[in-house]
Length: 412
Image (cartoon, rainbow, N blue to C red; front, side):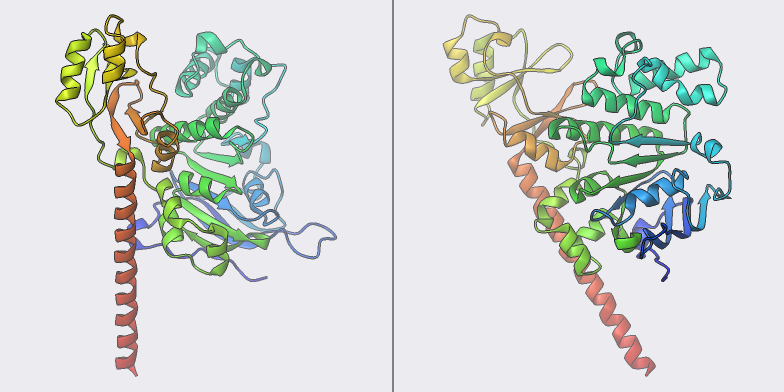
């Protein structure tokens, strides 16, 4: 068996301290001609999301399950935060690692609070500390404790159950989380929102996360680094999403990424990274005549109505105002349906705005306050900038190769 090592990343993206190190990890099942995992060596940096992605049967889930010893390795070592845990007590190991799966795995006979309290109770926390942690985590995943603590899993939607699954995984405050297709069984709209919410949460808690998916678009959106795996968990490329999109290591990686790499790059940039457009806004209590004045002074055909907390309430146009001049602003025009937060990707924003009535997406902060607008011009400019940057990096890479070749000639 040949040892598999990661593709070197550039200095600009060099990883920090290693939290998980897999050394020659292997799994051979009886009567199987080939190993499920073939002598894998991989370093996972602290505080990053590392995605394991590849075709069905490549060994990505087996690899992840060996990290917390749900599946026992046949060979090799697992180093967790500097400690060899290959021979450690697996139950004690699992209490240090949060685990989220596609089927969520909540205990149906337990309330939401009891589900979240499972690991803290095993760790011996006192009741007061556990109660405080339950409330804290429910608030963190945007579920009001007073509403959801005493409900049962069957009383929740799929997206809500998945949020509880994440909260339960975080309950013992683990340094490491394992996530196996965590958003795979949810409808596309809910999945996008949960992905964005999880990325917002990760920006706060900075856990080390191993995340398994079969979806390259999800990998690009969610990962700080991506390991593209071939059969036997052999690494085809281990690098940042940007490097994988702009410089695939071989034909297997290029084929796995597929066509449309430029559009996939929209998952690399977030709304917070671009200059937002501004739009004429008015307060909820304004007179229609005043709103018409605002529209005449701008080059836009519609204005955004904000309430006292600067939360978007309606889109109104001049025809709306002239037709319903005696009605309050919150009763005319259209509701603002395309709303994104700064951590949303440009791909999310594009998906929202192309289905919106006015072909723009409204950006709000975590409190729902208006921040600005993303329109198609913003997206186009972002794509243009990414292409220019990619070409510049490619040019630098060619120049460096030329320099190496010249040095080699001199050496001869």
